[in-house]
Image 1: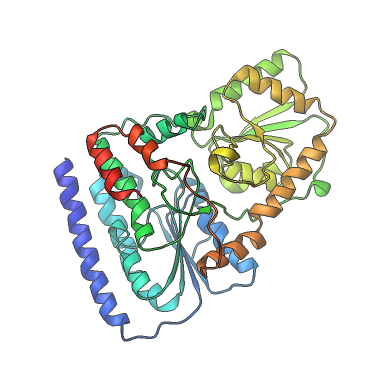
Image 2: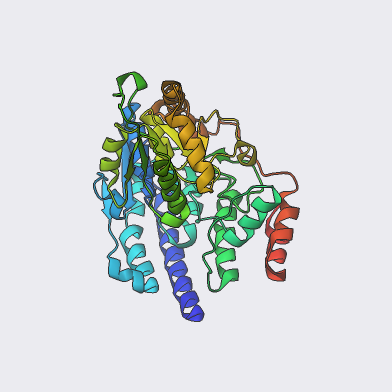
Length: 415
């Protein structure tokens, strides 16, 4: 199985190289248009959709979006949409060919039409991101947004967080061929670095970070100011898990039961398997949102702040090396402690102050204006780096490695 997988990858790499050489020979003699943005290709938490919205709302009209979408993104409009049939999930090699075929022939079109390329996740047009070489050779401006497990190697990352004193770990995925997964994550982190392509990321994402990057940020397009939000006579708490284990849903449900046993007055909404537009409409009427445990706000937390909600979630600015003023209350993975913190807010007379702070954080970090200003500064090469690895990061990686092969790769490829 592993050999078959490797042969398929090599064949797709060969096709990518041939196609790239053809395009390079053509575009060496053409003068492509200047300006224009491409945003794609793997949709994650509506990042592609909201990025195009932000650029358009700030006066940039020449923006094209292309997205491989899942269940929660079908209601969004994209210029080019790719839906992968569910049955292909059982045939991973066939799925790779299908996705390759669906994306590869768009590359020549955008090479001519666009100057700026914004990619989310680790997916570009060609296998193994080989088109990044072509984009750089043709002097395109490129930026990547790493979003999570595209570059996070969980077995090592959990140990790194433990070394840093972080009381959180990602669930074990129990991957077969762990060294192969390790190589993939290392490659997708290092390859754009070698090409000097700027990266948006977080410390809890970037296992192998060894140079400066930019703090991950996205645009939240919908918002509701606290003065325009209707106050509920009975406070409403909401939790919207996309993955119950990762989002700490059982802890939330247990905490809610503790509060009910204590006769605390509130209403609770479990927003599960709902499209994003429905969740947004509900957030307009919610007082408190419980996002997820972890180290930094997830998409739901950003949406909640934009809609003037009090937010419980993961936030660890010292670990993330970030000085943003995020007014989130900690989501503690202990039902009794979480219930106690929720109780304090439910009985507080200062709820409006918390809601106002949430909205101010949205305006500062997740509004269209601030997002686009910073994005264009990065694309133009004028933005100073914001995120740097922890001290002695390479030594910590070596300590956290699972075997001698991984230690060898870290010694060779990590600064």
